[in-house]
Length: 92
Image (cartoon, rainbow, N blue to C red; front, top):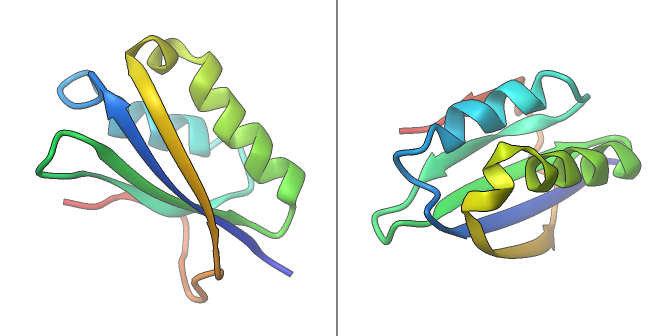
């Protein structure tokens, strides 16, 4: 069964390559989803995996990467998986 997380990052998370770095980190994990900038300055992400540990490791990697210093707050919500998502993409 697939596990999915809906995440909001706030802080200095726009204009620092956050989305591109997140996509690069995702390529090292068995996760699908997307990441996008929000008009209010936050970054929104949906990530899912068949392996809950894989998803947790991906989220942890974002926190411990160079992006971590830009993140002030992180809000993580478990949500229903989104069938049909392929790969990990940046959404405009």
